Length: 378
Image (cartoon, rainbow, N blue to C red):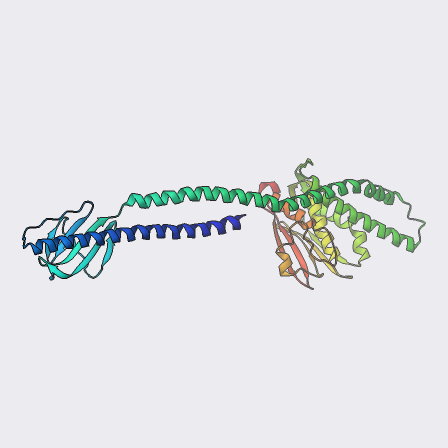
């Protein structure tokens, strides 16, 4: 709509300028013709006085000032205060005063030049500007109405799609809760002592799939219902939460034969624990998902920052520009809803945590969260 209004405004301004110049030129052309007519009328009077051999002559034209000069450009007579005349120009202006320099081919009473001075009616020009202003006001109102109407029509399918997608996310999230909880509970209470290696391997896959679904459930819950959930900031031991989440994902780490190292110091921040878990889980799960088999993940916590580094597929410079936007997946081969990093970005903005991304395709990625000095994070 901005492009539409801007382009039409520029076009309208250009048309208005051309219209104003056209009206102004028409007004000046009309004044020019009238001044020439007056000069011819004065020349006829001079001829009359010359024919009757009268050395006394008078001239007066209402609305005009007149001056007569001889062939040496010496003033003979004038109805206005002497003014320096530019004899090199036939028609020119000095602010709102316009001058016509008429050169006579045949001299009468020694008059060679007739100077006509006229003040252009500024009210007419102001009237043109006022008229243009009213036209511009009504035109802009009409254009704005059309722009709003068109934007509503064009955005309607997008709004419907967003509404449908949001409804799907809410419905899917609601339906996922019960089966995920049931599977996790059943897995935790299952007797694994009498199972074969093959059966344990199958259980590991169930554990991985269920925890992946559980992580997705938490992401979709936050995206769909975070405005309705009551959150409470409390002092949290970040180191303890990181170790807890690494242990939670141990099955997935072992399944991909990844090596993970942790370098952690004691760090306490003021945050809702559920939001901190969302941040850590998303960064860890992405590192695990995009790491190659037998890869390495490094998790580091200092007083200044928290970082997760992997040596996986990496992220291109183009994708880095939009990776934190919702529904933007980092790699089409690995799928994903593209909500995880959007959630990380939202939470970090809320707590004034700065995100730094260092990544190169085929060499891996490092996400670094720099703690803010804001009291909310101390």
